[in-house]
Amino acid sequence: MQAIYSDVMISMSEFKKNPAAVLRDAKSKPVAVLNHNRTAFYMVEPALFEALLEELSDQDLHRTVLARMSERSHAIEVDIDAI
Image 1 (cartoon, rainbow, N blue to C red):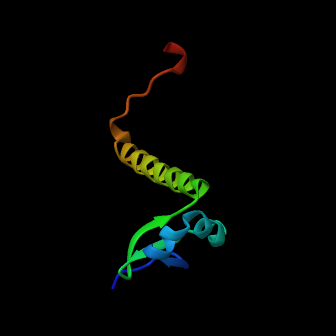
Image 2: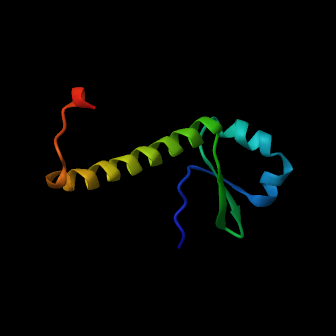
């Protein structure tokens, strides 16, 4: 069974009738659009999509920082004024 990560769901055929109304009625919540009772895609507002991308970027940066922290013993100390 497939998990659906939204409280708002609609069939593909209903979605096709008026996508703008679906988004408006969802009141800023994500919408799962179903095709044959399986999630075909999620529709989200631009602000939520941007927040998701920002979170993914932050997580990627966090992994990079952790990886570099583990290599800290190989670091060379420098005087910032000498650069």
